Structures are given as C-alpha cells and as structure tokens.
Length: 403
Image 1 (cartoon, rainbow, N blue to C red):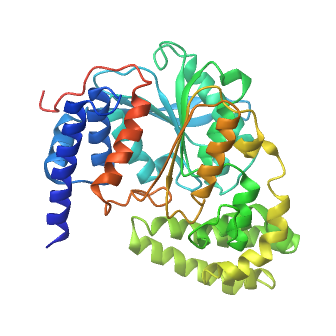
Image 2 (tube, one colour):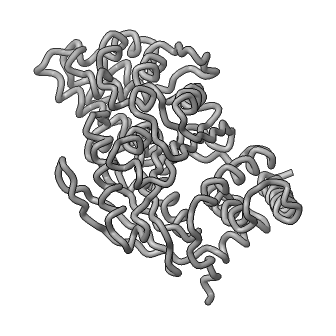
Image 3 (cartoon, one colour):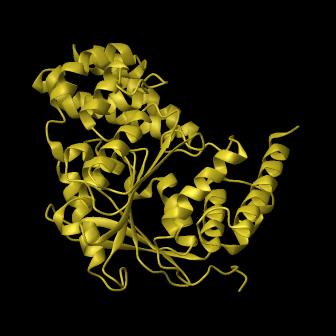
C-alpha cells in the first residue's frame, strides 16, 4: 500500500468522522467552527483525498501587504494577511527564533491558511528573534504591536485581537497577554510549542533533565541558541563576535534543512570552514556545534544558562496570568521545548484563574506538522482549533475561488 493510498483513506475517514461529529452534535462546538477547523488543519497538514479537495476549493483568496508598526523599541516591520471576503478581529502571529523572520516559509503558510479560513493575520518581525536572541524587549514588542492592531477599527472592530505565538514566542505572547494594557484587548492567546518557565527549559536543553521527565533528549538547535545568548561567558571578548557569526551560519543551515537541502548543505560547509578559522577556545566550542555534540556543549553552557534568563518577564509562570482564555498546543515528541512545559504551564495558569485548554499531539513535532498520525489524533487537533474559533466573530464564509 502506498503512502498516497494511506493518506487518501485517512482523509476519507477524517471527513466521515467530522461529518458524524457535526451531524450528531456530540460536542458543544458549532458546526461551522468544526468545518472551518477541519479544512484549516487539512491544508496545513497537507492532507489529500476528499478533505484536501474540499479544503482547496473553499479557501478564501488572501492578499498581503507590508506595514510598519511603531513601538517603544523602534519601528516593527509587519505583514498583514487579509481574506478577500472580509474578516473580523485580527490574530497577531509571532514566529519563533529564526533569521528569516516574517518571510519564514512555514510562518507564511500558517498565516495564509488562517487568513484563507476567514481570519485576518498580522505577523510582526522582531529583530531579536531574527538574531537568535531571547530578550526582555520581546514581550514589549508583542504588547505594542497588539495594542496598535487593537486600536485600528479596520483590524479590530471591537478593539480586541488574539495572540498566537510559535515556539519561544508562545510563552512570551502569554506574558504580553497578562499585562495591564492588554488585559481587555486580547480575546485569547495560543501558545504553539511554547514554554512556561524559561530557566527550566534552558536547563533541559543543556542537561536533558526536566521535572516533567521528558521522553526525548534535547535537540542541538535549542542548545546552540543558548550559545548565541551567552557566548561572552564561554570565550574571550575578542572571540565573541566571530563565534556568533559562525553560529549564525550553522543555525541558518539547520533552518534551511527543513525546506532547501542544497542551500542547507552549502551553509553547513561554511560553518565548518568558519570553525577552522577560529582561535581556541572558540574553535572547540564551534566544533561542538558543528558535530551536534549536545552533551559537551550543554555541559559548557549550563552554568551560564542558569544565570541568563534572570528576568521573570521571560516566563509566563512568573508573570501575571492573563484573565482571558489560553490555548496550549504542543507536540508530544518536542525536543526543543519539552511537552512537559505545556502541562506545567497549564497547571500554573489554572491555579491563578485563567481558563486553559491544553493538547499534546503527535500531529506536530516542535513547530512542524507531521501528517503521519491517526485519524483520532487529527480530529483532536480539529476540535482544539474549533474551540478557539468559537470565540471569534465569523467573517463571511469562504467561497470557492472560481466565484
């Protein structure tokens, strides 16, 4: 049996299950939300078969335009994804840590598919994330962009928006949602593979240990990001920038490997060449990076990682909890930010009165979709997403592009 045949059969079963759920009203979710959610998930996951064909013909056309948003830390480049047939409130979607920013292909796809489902999306480009830095400016920038969007009647008719953060931006978006200026401006916040406590997450990346007993060893991408933030602690001052430049090349290559193998291999070769040109001890540290020696690099970084995230502003468990609902979606096999972070964050937020819905799933890894899962797992994500859509005023229903 080919992979295409399996996928087509799974798509047919998913369509049947969604139809039964809608027709039988076995969950307290409006039918339109379930349908929108099923079509959105099928497009993002790349499902074929009947569901994929229905998703393709019912998606709304999407236009994009660049905007510049003022903030306390300077202008922020953003991109607006607008459905052709109008929309209601806007979702502010913040990417994770990568150099491509708002041009990152997976972010563009996600924003496009959300907009194609009838919901405008605003993606801000945060320079610190583009340089692989986790700084206290980040929640400020999310807050400022959200306030700007909420003040524009064309983006937020009732002066409210939603926040969606991917990877480390998930936790930072929850921090922003709990701030006084946004408490009455955010309808809900979604953290997609985010953290609850940054110090706890960094300890996991350096040592592989976590109080939630993670099932997977840490990924080298995460520990190398720590190196970008604490390089001055591990090499002499005069070697810091050269080491960071080499690390940037490696991280860029790692990111390219997800969608451009040829360019990725070229970048990895440049990272190895940069290693050879470095003096010691930077050369040894870069060798750990290039050989993906997480244990050696983690041991070198662990003391600095304990000091680095000193500000509570980087951890939603240490900041005021949002009064509005928080949705936590996390890949079970995540090895950058362990899924246990979502479970621990959910307990912390609920204890402080925040309505929380959390889902661990095999449909995603860290911030990537993995379509090779069961129908039941796919349907769980459909219902999770539909629960959020139920808090959103409906735009005009998407129409076939042929119209």
